[in-house]
Length: 288
Image (cartoon, rainbow, N blue to C red; front, side, top):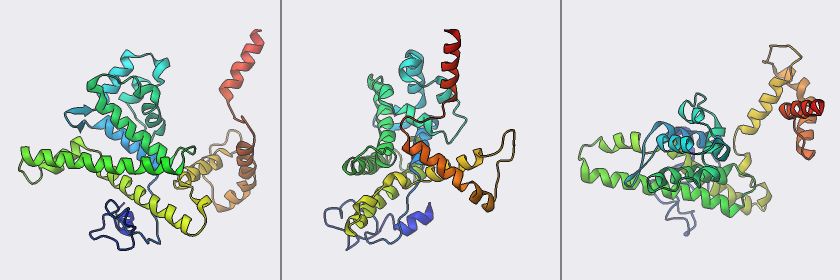
């Protein structure tokens, strides 16, 4: 994280003269940067939902917390929300992206209607903006920039609000830091939001300046594609084999099989290895 902040020069103590005037009031990095840094957006969404599940986040006079989600789950049918109490209360897998995606889905946020639930609803919207900006392939460039910088401005104002409230209520020098650790998102997540938004803007400018706007592909700026490839390689073991590790030579031997598998999955419509569905179809045919 510190390396990314250093290479991106965020926050920049002085205004960059190369930065366009329309961005100078909000841009805190180096405009003509030759090295771009991006935090994995999937991990950002996971860090965000972890903040909600482990802290009581203060929004004005309201609190966003896990308790609000748990209360909603207990009052609403699982068929409506499609998220269980066990997923929220235990959350043993700290890198489970599915929980973040389920929690910020409209079928959940539209059920948060009471005034005391609005803070939690707003925070779930922030997670949705992370997905819209960097993960969802269907979003346009304008939608991506809107979501990315909405996150930046919201978090800046949120942090400023907490700072102003502390100055009037507690004069201790470490009081603000203590409040941030309990009522605000983690420092790591806040840094990720700033770094990604700044570098997304620089990335788009560089692709447009080089007449390669088609190479502006924010959805590829994460490690999930590499992790998916690695999972596929590990799964290519023989029947009843427990050996899942491999060396470079074995990767090259599996490369052609992996290529065929990936091409089949990406070029064939409605192609999926759904074992459960196949078993259901077979059993229904037998019963009939």
